[in-house]
Amino acid sequence: MANCPSTTRFLGWPNTEMDKSSRTAPHSMMDPQNDVRRFFQKVVVEYNCGDIRTLLDHKMDIAGPLLACVVNGIDMVGAMKCGFGTSSRERSEAFIREYLDLAPNQAKVLYSLVRCGIAHEGVPKPGITFFVCEESVDPGMCLYRGRDGRIWLNVSELARLYLAAVEMIAQSPADHLSHVPLSDKATSRLLEHASLPKTIDDFCDVVATRIGRKVERGDIHTSASPFFPESLSGYTLQPGEFRANR
Image 1 (cartoon, rainbow, N blue to C red):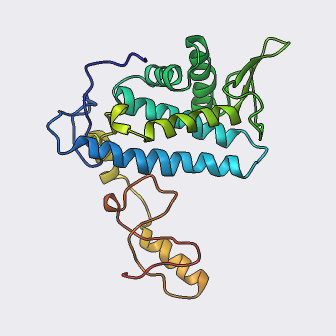
Image 2: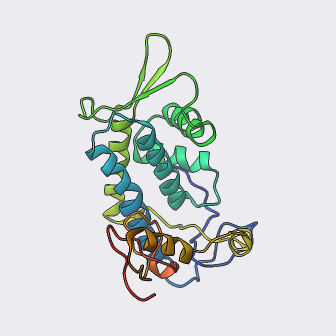
């Protein structure tokens, strides 16, 4: 089992204020496990894994977007397990060891050379060759040593390992996950004071002009949104239509 810090506790979600020096909230918050279940279902299963499945199903010969979705998911679910106050390295490597069943040195490779390369430099670190493979020809294996000393990463197999881990967790999320991200004061201030020249109303008006009919206001509800409808306000962009209530 992965060793996660014992000092972190349940986090409320999505609109709970907290001091920026803290990434935890007390157990006394209202129904924290329900927050965890809802966040896991909407953000992890539907949004993150939904994108990964779409990329796999389309069998595109493009590894980058698939890899970005997978390493992001590993970091996110690792934080739901270990706490969002833990370092990205700690929670990602812990998740990889426990749920992908990879050796500690392989977890370090995936975090330091793959995830950090994607996050900070746009591609995995030098020395990593990554590729996609439609069929699971070597189940459970995603890292290989090349003749030239390089490491080869089968992104498709890594994605399948991650999806299998999420499916296992989904059988009983409360047995595995205890945390969701909180809004902090710095984030709230930035959202409040961000100077933006246009509103979403302006966007809808532009679309209305382009399609030649009125654009109606509605509740945001898109399969691509990682947020819950009740946490948002604005407009609904549905394929080919806008819903009423403007």
